[in-house]
Length: 407
Image 1 (cartoon, rainbow, N blue to C red):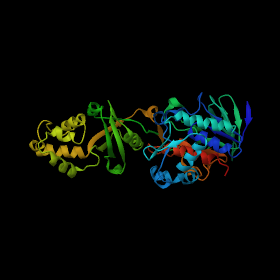
Image 2 (cartoon, rainbow, N blue to C red; image 1 turned 120 degrees about the vertical axis):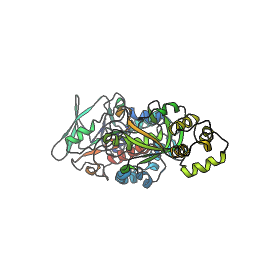
Image 3 (cartoon, rainbow, N blue to C red; image 1 turned 45 degrees about the horizontal axis):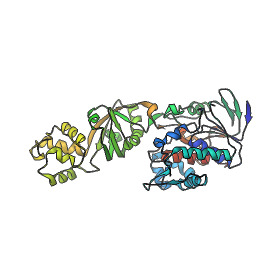
Image 4 (tube, one colour; image 1 turned 180 degrees about the horizontal axis):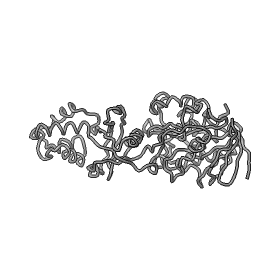
């Protein structure tokens, strides 16, 4: 089966579907090739199926959250920011809202409404979608792309958009297929690390604190060279480590460090930003309380008991009756609780990939390869990842929109 199109898109995730719609609106004959039996498997699982599409930040603030590579997104966001994305979904019958004033969801908080809306729009625009078609080879001459080869067919087009994703959640199709193909035409792929995932810890006391979610926790790396790395959000202790929004965000920084070091010491402020002086002042309000009762004014009992053990303080007596050394140690641990991250479950539990195709070799104004004419990239396959909160989906949609345009 040899067929010719104007544009071929590798992958039917968020970026690929948006690229297909964008290209079809330019009157291009579009083919989408998806290796799984169904489209959008990873999108269906996004945000626990609730599908946090984007957020309300300004483009400037949005890019800052991606770190030093964030400026690369400027043309894509100028063309298709969160306002344009919401208008787009409204136009295809998917209403959105921001119930917390920040994160934007489909009103039903159902990823299937998003997937069905995108699928219907592709059908309306006569986009051809073929599932169970894994692209294995790029067909090209010395200067430009000519098409792709799957396990059993060749398809030809002067424009190929790689929207094959990263390596997170391989059961949902993300196995890094695009990276060797990009390398085959001369692209550099940076080091790849799993990100947005739970972390394992050396210490086991957190296993006794699993019943409680700690709000507004700040985490920072306790290695001199990396002290600027930090994150804030809700924390949940697990049987063998930590999870929750703050951990999902912080794991983007931690997993590359675990590739360098066997262990990464971190410090956690569990007391909503209070420092040692503020904690002492707070405790002076409750002079008759036992030490356990005192800590319980700030933290759940399960954690209070564990911090007493860590600081060698007796939970049953008042703070004034503790030894000066133990009292100071408790205050210090309450301000910054130490923990040691020593592992994770790899890409099988990672929502996204840290690393990807080098941005230096991609034109940010078009998403076209600087190595091979007619080859474009969008979404997670590139070396760009953001925190939780709709950042990565917005980037996928914006880059897909720009990649599909005839510029």
